[in-house]
Length: 122
Length: 110
Image 1: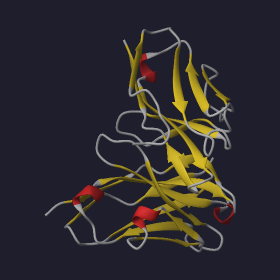
Image 2: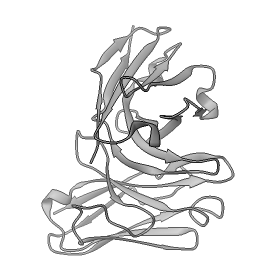
Image 3: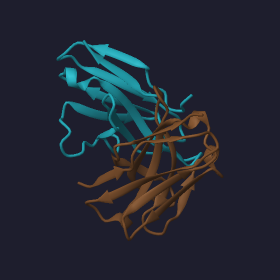
Image 4: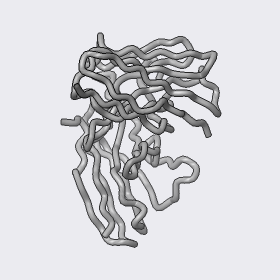
């Protein structure tokens, strides 16, 4: 079984950017993609989008379009999620998860990173 | 407000059985596989059920999943105190082209 290891917690001021990394091991990175999911304190899970581990193709949810960029580096087997123009309501735990998506749908996250807490505060 | 509706909380005694429902619609659950995740306090979610009713290796058969139409159910038998967690259903929505999660169900074993 594979593993995803994320970067550490971040504290950012409103208006700043944050970039979270997610390093994969134990599986063929290019066969799958990586989804990003966030969870505000005491709240449920929110899917943010997906990036292909093969060709870098991305899909973002509409509410984050223009503020989020998801990328991968196949040489280091690492996925990245950058969120810009941070606001206080972006404070959340951010999770990466291995997910296979095709042209029709995504097929569910089968394992997750440990999470990265991003706090946005002045 | 999630498009997948779960009861916010449930409680049951040890060794009892509980079912957690997840209600969706014709564009999500009715057309796509359902997944169930367990999130223990302070940890990342973990896959419990995939493709409606299949268990990953290492998940005990006390956990089961089913789907009928636009609804799905997670069943847990022989409840243990270690099953206290938040449980989330998930699926793809073919109209919105997004992955969806239910609002989560907090299970208390008392």
